Amino acid sequence: MVLKTGGTTIGLANNNIIPAEDLDRSYIVYPQINQEKCVGCGRCYISCYDGGHQAME
Image (cartoon, rainbow, N blue to C red):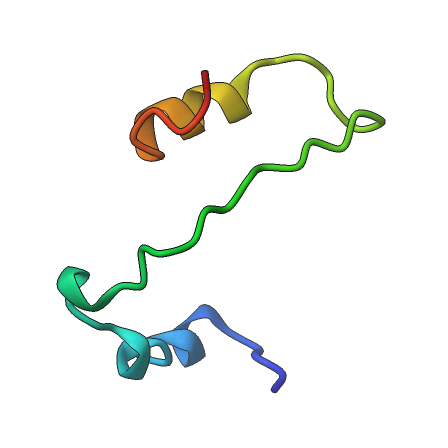
């Protein structure tokens, strides 16, 4: 699928929306940091700590 404008993406994901209660929470996903690209800014830590419900320590 090739999208030429932002407007063509509106609504494409609607069929994938499910209630939070139906999410599969039986697995754990661990972040993988590419050390060659990491500049040590800490943004990944902030994102995971805020949005990931304290996923990183």
